[in-house]
Image (cartoon, rainbow, N blue to C red; front, side, top):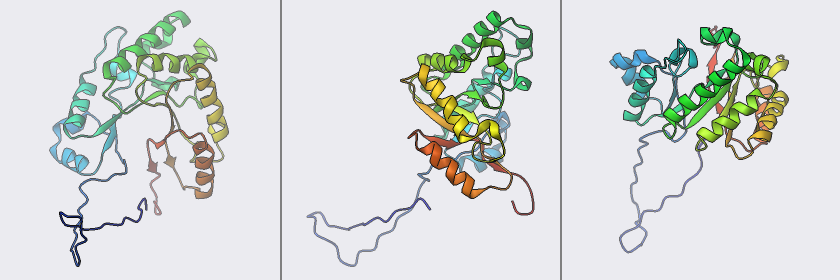
Length: 260
């Protein structure tokens, strides 16, 4: 899997082939990026650190960068935990994805957002995007700008149908150096979920690109599987892959069970 044939030739200083040479190759690190989420518990747990750093080259933070963690009360931002996790990742040469700038699920908002007027909410969102993305600009490999936008519409219900494209336009203005992802579930996991089909995903993607033409975009697929439907998964990936955009499986897990 993910391997290709390689021809190796041993030569001397003059460029002449060495006959009967013995060649040994040791793989020092995987070339294929595979990661695992971490949280602040890793900062004080040495066995956890050793287990994680010996296996993975990419990470994202479970909650520490999310809005409800960094601004519990309006105007009082606290990036202490996110800063510490980023520092830990850098020490071990582990790349970090930014997760997430905004989450469209009404259940996962800072409590103080619910009472804001549309104008106040718009200002708060603008401040949030600029704050978190400018703070970590140049230190991450990607951003999940809006999470689960096809299933939920907390911001659109208050700010209008163009809210999401406008978020990406601002995000691109703040950090244009890395791909901006639309992170969603059931696009490849479940063909019965009509809200997030590949066609619906591409429709939303085109809407975003219509307002943010020069942005680097990425396709984020959460990949929370029950029993994987491989034929549907392949067909969905083919459809999404036709865009030529990078595709990341961002939160991969498989439901516990006897055949897991």
